[in-house]
Structure formats: C-alpha cells, structure tokens
Amino acid sequence: MKQTKSRGFTLIEVLIVVVIISLLTGLALSSYGNYIRKARRADAKADLLELAQLIERNYTESNSFLVDAAGNAYALEYTTSPQSGRVFYNLRFAAGQPTATTYTILAVPAGAQTDDVRCMTLGLDHTGLRTESGSGTVAECW
Image (cartoon, rainbow, N blue to C red; front, side, top):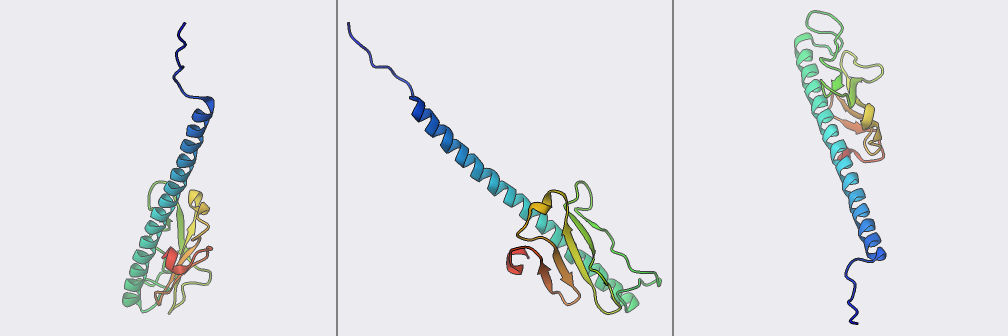
C-alpha cells in the first residue's frame, strides 16, 4: 500500500499567520487613529486662525478687542470645532481675555480628541504666538 503525504497547514503555521495579521492590524489601526487626530487638530487650527482674523477685523472697527462696533461685549463668532456635528474642540477666550489691547483664544479638546495627549489645548494670541499644552512641541502641533 502506497502512503500519500498529507497536504495542508500545521497548527503552528496557522498560528504564525494569525499573529502576523494581528500585528499588522494593530499597527494599521494605530496609524489611522493618529491620522484622524491630526485631521481634527488641523480643523481646530484653521478655526483659531479664522477667529483671529474676525477678532482683528472687529478691532479695526471698534479700536478694542473688548467690544464690537455697536459697543456690545465682543463674543466669538462660534465656539466649537467643527461648527456642526460631533464636537472635537471647544473654542473660547483664555481666562481674563480679551482685554482692550490683547486676546488669547484657545481650542480645548473635547470628546474623542481628549486622547490627543501630544497636542492638547492649542492657543493663539494677538501677536500670532501659537501655544500648545500637550507633551509635543509647538512645531509638531502647529
């Protein structure tokens, strides 16, 4: 009787393939999460820059960051980023701001964006100085 050699995969081979696929999936999900956080951060930075332009425009009309042209207390045009849907950043003035001649606006992470420990709260002031409160650097976050 002729004995034929069995064809197929051993349990060890299957386990090795499963481990490799698991590692690749873990890396892909991690990279995707970082990409999403960076995209949300980019939206918040764009919103901060747009708000700064609106604040500066108001200053040219009222000669103060505190009030608008009608003499009312100045308020930000919008306070969330993005402006509709799920909120990932809350936009606000820093404590004690604005003054007649200065302002600092902040983008404070909210919801899922609080996982972005590298670049937490982003800030922008009247001189264009950019700040961040996470473990990263201003150059990395801005």
